[in-house]
Image 1: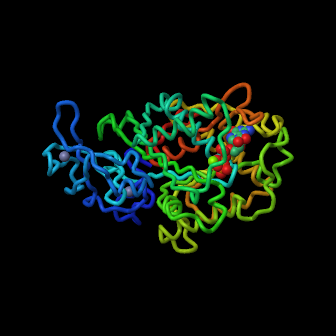
Image 2: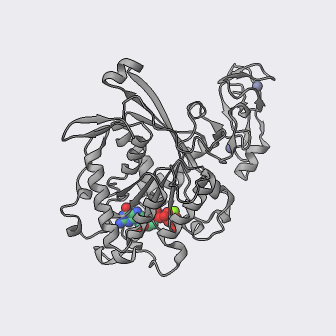
Image 3: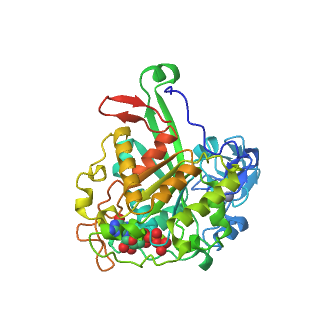
Length: 422
Ligand SMILES: Nc1nc2c(ncn2[C@@H]2O[C@H](COP(=O)(O)OP(=O)(O)OP(=O)(O)O)[C@@H](O)[C@H]2O)c(=O)[nH]1
Ligand SMILES: [Mg+2]
Ligand SMILES: [Zn+2]
Ligand SMILES: [Zn+2]
């Protein structure tokens, strides 16, 4: 594959516009609206008013008093407010009035959905993955992760970072969406790539690319029932990529591979919470949205990650690729990727969960297997273990997706060859 070719946006054909990362409505770009910048200091501008549409989305009027929204051609990047005359570049979704970052309007798509059964480790993973992206991994990739709205910043701190990373308390079970409206966390991941060789000579050396990372902390409970809430279902349908988290301790054949007796509920025999059934339900939603006929495989890249790898018996992983540190600074190490993929596949089959592998193979054109640990060690008494949070390979699925989206190079350190996505 040539260095200049881009991986087509998954689902781009099926989509008639842009998918709002907050309400997941599909909106034609010319229907996007603008929000007045408002006045600030000596700068004149419209005063805040209660935005009823935003308040309805939030389920509360708190935080919904903002300068007014107006219509203008959403294809343009800026428009003048009809009331105060000030130019603004703040575009919003016409359905829910949430802000849409310019980079997202220009290259829509790439919503990454995170799915897993109850207790799979989703909330913990979200807390740790975002922290890694904002710090160590962000630096390594030359990528910045910026929250798209203030509510995302507040909620990440309050519900994820403060309890888990600062106070070292395990996160509570996520409450069902039925108990109250919940919102996704919306981030823009921007990466400046310096291209090499021929590609650099043809198309300029630097290119900035972005990915909107929409993480919806679903309650495992909600994915059990066929009755998933509307917003939930739209989120899953809108996904351009899916990360399935599977707790190995919930796989029947894996219990013997666990070092200590795992805390947490017994997987029991509730078929609705079995990983295969959850994956099947999400697959159904994606098929409906993409209109993929039976027999054809879905074009949405899927990562399946075993969580809590730290809980496995050490001898099981002694020679394992899963225990090695990831190499490939600022790039995806393809040799390592293949080794981990093969190893997780072998574990799944050994643990009588080979059907997960077979199912993904039948349903998806492109899927990859991962093993990770968000905490890096067994928790004790509702708290993070004594060593603190030491994530291990938590970023791997995301690096692979970035590679699939053409935002990250692949390398084979043995032969030092570079390959850009796909
Ligand atoms: N050993 C180990 N345990 C983990 C790890 N991550 C999560 N856990 C354990 O799994 C439990 C559940 O994690 P959560 O992140 O709350 O799981 P969830 O998928 O959000 O669960 P629901 O919100 O109930 O759907 C935690 O309380 C920890 O006990 C990990 O990396 N290693
Ligand atoms: Mg949770
Ligand atoms: Zn919206
Ligand atoms: Zn105005």
